[in-house]
Amino acid sequence: MPLHNHTAIRDDLFTVESMAKPLNVHRISRKERNPEAVYQMIHDELLLDGNSRQNMATFCSTWLEREVQDLMNECMDKNMIDKDEYPQTAEIESRCVSMLSNLWNAKECIDSSNENCSPAIGCSTTGSSEAAMLGGMALKWNWRARQKAAGKPCDKPNLVCGPVQVCWHKFARYWDIELRELPMRKGSYMSSPADVIAHCDENTIGVVQTMGTTFTGHYEPVEDVHAALDKLQQQTGLDIPMHIDAASGGFVAPFMHPEIKWDFRLPRVKSINASGHKFGLAPLGCGWVIWATEKDLPEDLIFRVNYLGGQMPTFALNFSRPGGEVIAQYYNLLRLGYEGYIKVQESCFAAAEYFEAGLEQFGLFELISNSSKGLPLICWKFKDDAKPSFSLYQLSDELRQRGWLVPTYTLPPDCEETVVQRIVVRHGTSVDMLHLLLKDFTEIIEELTETPPCGEDKKRMSFNHS
Ligand SMILES: *Cc1c(COP(=O)(O)O)cnc(C)c1O
Image (cartoon, rainbow, N blue to C red; front, side, top):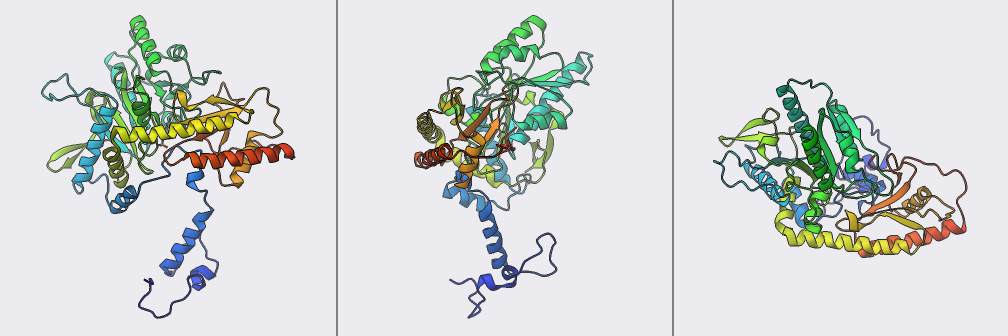
């Protein structure tokens, strides 16, 4: 059906004024414009963006089921903060919190009259960054209360962590905390438990460990660090809590590596953040933070809003926020269940292995991490004895010409001289797509070898998380 069925003849879309003449796109115009033409113009401009499915750099969802798209449309007008207006959306958020605290092995608290049995508590956020801010604030508040109770100063808080995602740098700067980020060790590409302990003192608000680092996808040795902190407490009395940044791993480890203890099974783990919009398979804009028990979230950080005659606690940086992402997360949790998530993540790991085998065939690359030690992410560098006539940056540039975004970056200190390339295999990255990517690798490597690129290899800042 034509959109303008009230006029017998309508102008061709590309001949209406807003399409046919240059527009000032930096000032709001006086006049209205034709919506179809403006839509078409913006739609066309967005063609210049990369194609998200070929963005091998991102951890975030780029493929979503039809049902998720429908629910997102239906929830476009729902404001997550209006618990009173949209009580079912609020209810669904709290069901997700229950499901996730159970997934991460929080203690079941059926008997609410038992004072020692405090249930897990948590909320949705815009992503892991906001979740990390909230988790970090709780650590800071609790530390301050401990220091005050002991009559000690509270003006020099620090946070100890391995090589972290940029959100922790932000957290430290915004909340005035010294970030003691430990160096990445050559070989393990992580920090060691001994490093962690050596940097802790009575001003340490907590230790952050990452389940699936952004640089290499490795799981940090949470259980070993936990044991080392236990020992520290025996020796010095310092009782230091842990927060786990499980942005990706929170939705991978429980399904693929359930034997690894990194979650609320470990008593020092007081809070966990995860990105629903990464391996949680929700659309962009969904994160989670959960505390082991209500007692781990300081009461004075919680705002209580009236919720259908009851009290709904909220803890968030923003006020208004869309509700659709949380609904879509709920859809995935219900629709997939354990078996479904396992199937999805298994297929990512299988595709990652396929790609690893393909990479090895070039004889040029050494894998820094492979999917057997963490996320379905592959990170590689040139072999020490390889003598390539091109750089990884140039390889990325050539891949970019074919639409693939394969990031090249240097690792953080003390591995900063190591230049790596990485792909994240996520839902929707099929073996067939990776076959096509490998084919492009083959052709480009042949071309670059036959005709070595001339000129400076500019080490530009390409996309990375650091
Ligand atoms: C992606 C990521 C973050 C930031 O998460 P957002 O959901 O993008 O805000 C934090 N930590 C780690 C380990 C990550 O991978």
